[in-house]
Length: 422
Image (cartoon, rainbow, N blue to C red; front, side, top):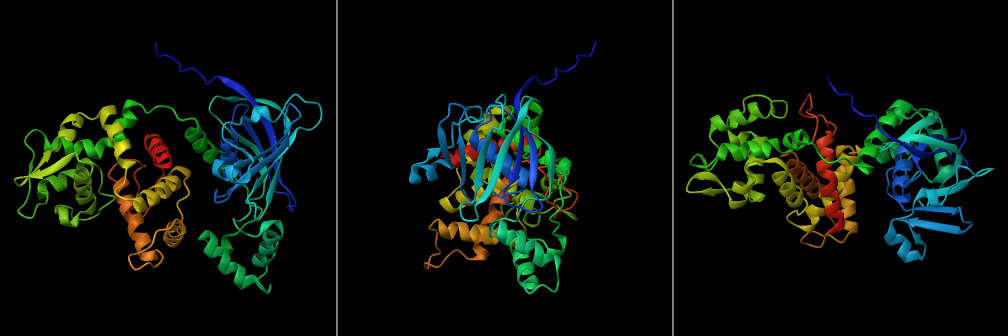
């Protein structure tokens, strides 16, 4: 008899109504969140619920369950600078009482410049499956990041809706610059609860990740293990120019299902970039090396040849140690975008990377700020490195940006943790 999988155990939760103060029409969400959610994770839920991009500081103001005034700021480094209470370690249950007679509220402020104040009111107790967050109602899309607070956003809505408005062209250009989208796509009244819950499901899996299954491990490391197994005990004979032979290149594209990544004839490594980068990356990861015209297993490659969790753990540690500090900074950004499902447009990526690296003190050899071309090169380098693993749902075309698989997400989460800890 086939066993029936056990249903998730329900946990105590809050039914919260969250509204952005001084918005007309009101922008609000009705959220169910676990009582034990931490303030940093509640911040992530609110960022997702309102479409914020987590670019700025946040704060919580309230009187807690014991009657104490709490002023909490995140991230923790900002709290240390201001003398406020750091967000990490604070649990929502300390702050709100679902059983209290009368309203139990707190204020969440995002971006202290624009001062977006979210009023969070407890509507009552609730239950949720463990490891879940839900939205059960809402209205209007979230404001545009850096729009200038409630008054600036109201002006943006008015100007974009009226082609004859004196600021229409200026704000249309700004909107495209800020979001990567044409102003004609702007719909301030739009709210898609199903799409939001899909994003919240993905966020919940990042907040409360489960360990990878054997199948997920095998799928993520498959390209790496495939080439290690091809090298085998005797190695692979290389061409006179040091490339993999055409038969191996063709078999790699076929066996790894990479025809969507490199359409057309793919039988020369120098002209088949996914295979070229895979071979080069395994050498950089010290799993393979060249010796006497052959590609052979390194000592680490021999230990990891059977794949499984040892190879997974080795790759997590190795990906988290890029070659230099600038690559590490870009790797952190790219992994954040992939995990959040928020990769900016091509032009925005280069601008964000260049500005972030320059602000962090990186400069070119002549002392000039990081240019867009260098930012694009760094982005491409990081993405080719990550694409040597099977982290994403295979795309239908070469230019698509597919979503992460569950295994891909579980791989990148510890890499992100290691990068942020360095």
